[in-house]
Amino acid sequence: MAQYLAAGSQFSAVLTWFAERDFTDVLDSAIDLALSNLSLELWRLDELLGYKMIGRSEAPIGTTEHLRMSLSDSGQYEMRVIWEGQNYNVNNTSTATPYGLAWSFASIPEPSVGILALVSFCVVLRRGR
Image (cartoon, rainbow, N blue to C red; front, side):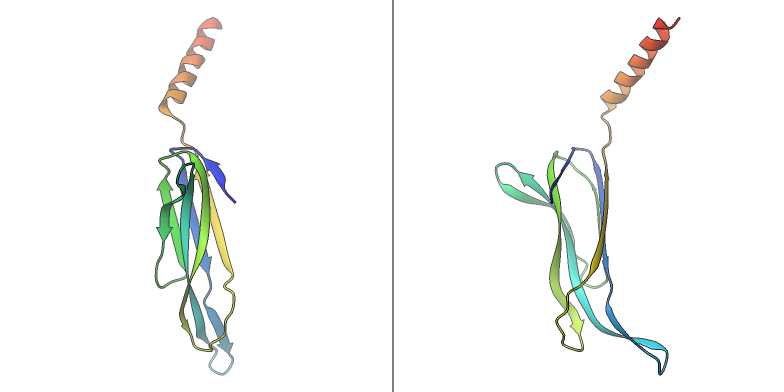
């Protein structure tokens, strides 16, 4: 699902997932069975060229990916979660990897908007006298 974001917006996204673990009562411990390798990508839809990758987080080992950037162009943006395989899988099972994805973006107003607001405020104050 693509979303329109303005140039200058601050974008941040975090992707996280768990390693597959088995807990044993014998030693009250955990055994890691499998760990998937996921990547997080941010794409912008270009009217002429189609989709263009803007950013990618691809840590080879771990359970978290993070993207944070200022967007240089306005447009339709979308995130993609990519399954890159498994780092290890000791029980050779093929399972889906549930994950959590959180994101935020904030439009930063142009400096001219602040100046316009200040001038408008001064005009209102002057007319009020």
